[in-house]
Length: 112
Length: 116
Image (cartoon, rainbow over all chains, first blue to last red; front, side):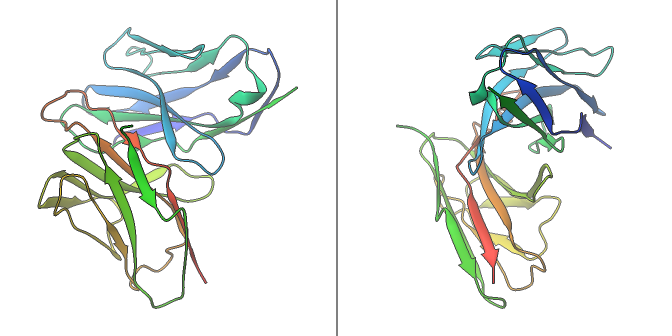
């Protein structure tokens, strides 16, 4: 079945460090891919998305590239801040399908 | 200001009681969704609705019910039949995947339900 796998957390980094959160997927069709962020006690916010192979989504310094050949959508940021501390979810949706399929989430903690 | 509102933010229920969670959106979206989040896990789909007066079961619909009488509103009732209702409940909406492919879902702030 369709699924999303994220690297396990928690991930702890120092401020200004480079961030990578790995995400791979399995899909029967041609999915669109998303990263959502969840701050403590809040709902999910859309961080970025990509709808076709080789698309790069970007927002607030975060980037992810849709790699069809490796079925991956890794999240990167060149220099993290304390305010980036949150849980990050990778997700996919198939064309014509209503359900978002989520990974289990990766908690990021950035220390000053 | 357009967005999705959920109320209440925190809800406490005694065992054996039904409780209804509110979700309202003013984004003029056709599709609405309910997800459940448990600690350390991703989100699981409970119910979704593509259009007024129509809805479908998601992966974990047992013990839940919904209605979609208005485009803006999609309330979720957690019934006494739900064995482990304590969780964080998130509502989402999207333009509608028949009109906008691919479709992007936007989330509300969530309701935390605790069964005492």
